Length: 459
Image 1 (cartoon, rainbow, N blue to C red):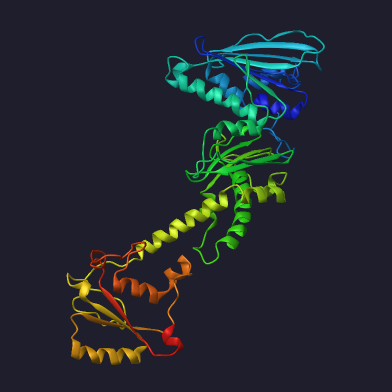
Image 2: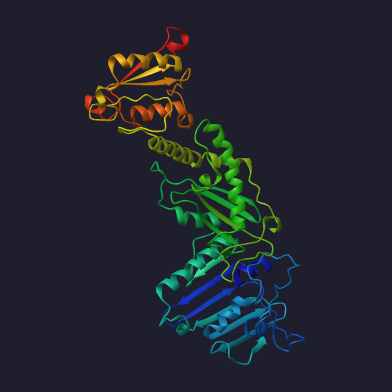
C-alpha cells in the first residue's frame, strides 16, 4: 500500500518491484517514486526515515482536514511489519535532498543500527524495504506456499489498481497494464447459462472510478479496491455502485416483466459480479486489515455517475435475461407449491359440496359440477338427491372465471377461484392428463359445466 500510495504523491513514479525469496525468508518492495526526505526532524532530532519506520505514532497522514486519496492513514502498517520481523532494512534516496539513507532494525524493532547517510546521484529517487518475517510468531517454520501465493496475489492487485505503474514480481513484469486485464484473469474460461463466454461491461467513469460488471451464478460477487487497498468484504463504495446499477436494471425489468412476479433489488444484485477500482478521499475502514470501507458516499470526494452507453450495455449483457429466467422459475416453483393433490378430505374451500368418493380409489368415476352462481348450485344440489352424492360434487363459480391461457403466473397465483379449482380437481402444474391412469391421479375424473345459454354462460 505504501508503494502504491507514492504514486499519488509522485505522478512520475512508474515502477514497483516485489521480490519474495522463500528459501532465504526475505521480502522486498521497491518503488521509484519520490524518496523519503533524508533530513533530521527539527523536534525529534532523528532522521525522518528512522521516525517513519522505527517509532510508533508517527505518520504524515494524520491530518484528516487534508484531502488525500492514499491507502495508508496512521503509519501503523510499516511499523508493524518491522515489529513482526527479525530483520528490517530501509533504503531510500531523495533527489530533492541529494542524500542516500540506509538503516536496519533487528529482533522485532528492539535493536537498530546507526543510520548510514551518504551523497546520492542527482537523479536518484527511490524507496526499498527489505524484511525477514519472524516466522515463529506466525507458528511457521518457513514462508509457506499459501502465504507466498497470497503475497503474489497482492502484487497482481497493485498492478491492477495502480494506473501507470509497471509491477515486477521476482524480476518478471506482470502482464497487467490496466484494470480490465485483471478482470480478464477472473472470468477467463467462464461461461454463461447458454454456454457462451461471459460478457464484461466496463466503463472508466472518471479519473477516480472504473467499474465493470458481468453475470454471477453464485449470488452477488465483488472484487474492489479503494486507493489500491483490496476491500475483500466490499463496503460503502461497492454498495453505492451496486445500488446505481440495480436501480437502472429494475427500470428495464419493469417493462419486460409486466404481470410477472415482483422482483426486488436484492434479487437483481444476486445475479451480479461487480468489479470496482476507485480513489476515495480519506477513506475509513472497520479494522486495520481494511477489508471493509465504511466512509459514507457523501464524503467520497467524487461521484460515480454512469453514462447512458454503460447502462444500455448492462441491460444487453444478459443480466436482464438472467433475472427474468430466475423470476419465471420462481413463479413456476410457486405454481407447483399451489398445485392440488389427490386427497379424500378437502378443507377451507367455502361453498364446495364435495363428492363422497372424491380423492379415493374411485375418484376417476367422480364428476365435478361447476355452476354459474349460487342459485344454480342450489338446483344442482337438489339433483344430487336423485343421483346420489358418492360420485358427484358441486362448486359455484362467481361470474366469468379468469382465462388462464394468456394469464401471467402472478395472475394465476393471486386468483382465489382458479386456485380453488386446482385444489378441488387435484391438478398438478405441468402434468399432462392423456390416459386413464393420469386421470386416476386426480380427485375428480370429469368436470361438468352447468351454465345458462347466454353470452356469460358461453364464456
